[in-house]
Length: 398
Image (cartoon, rainbow, N blue to C red; front, side, top):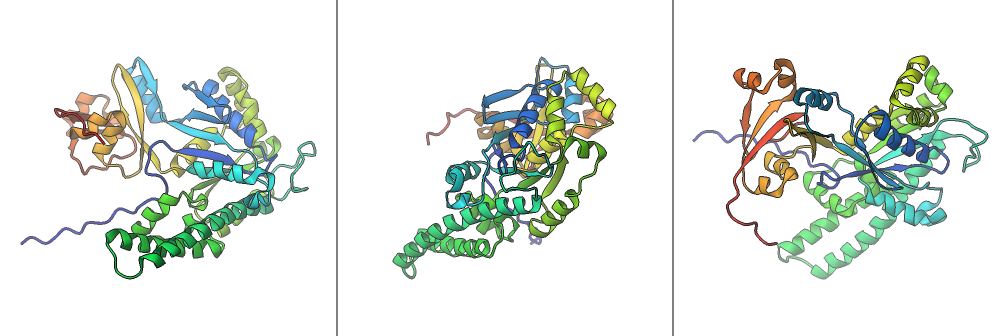
């Protein structure tokens, strides 16, 4: 008999297994959250020349900038262009004591629980006209306050959940059926997570098995959500690329939240740009010898959510379809329509780099770069996909 293939188990990811994920803007009051949110949404609509949709005053979708998408639109000259979108929610400011209800903290923390990742806005600008809720400027203290409030809320929540699970496990006693054993296993896992959080650590920085991740994901814990730190500096500091707090903020992240991304930006500068026409914006950037960092922030938010996208292209439409990383071809097809997944036959794939280099679909095929993939193929970021499917039977009723 031939030797068995070693199948490497795919590492499970923390978070909801969905392609419809949201990122929330979080921070203390008066750190520049709403200015950032307004700059982001205004810039996406006007300056970047992408479609834009405001869902309500606190939630907006912003287009994810991608040179590959732009090239595909020029290449196919489609009637419709639909980029990938990042859904951003502006959450009111948290204050010290929010976990125990201070400053409407419980409502705000429930809003954070409802998103899938966090833009943590940190104030690193000193301005007398903008009062600091803690009295003076200290970004490290502010970051610690937010991190601790989020952790405390998880600790309080886990305390209740573990107590309930412990009582349920005690009632079940020894032995039991598969459901009973699963409940006891859930109790053991969540007790481990509770001890981790009680020790002052965030869930996302723990080392968890795939089985543990699957259980953790059902609880939507706040400290399991990925975080992108946005250091809001003055316009002057941004343009001269110098701010005394940035090295200290980076050192704090490396120590307390290693692996999280930090992006310096200026809310005042970006908001000013967002109010200009594309021509005025280009002139202002040239004059200041600067670039807008908003595209980088949008991409960082999208990546934090573990999202990727594949393209479909032709004269009718060029579109980016959002997926969670490690999605297999049938589920990727299902993003377009459930029938595509139900009747999946194969996925025909071109790599963007091959199309860009060779110049046409026919040239890609002629060079043997046009691939046919089956049900186990994991769709990669930037793939150009065409799905073959066949549905003859009606969908089963759930």
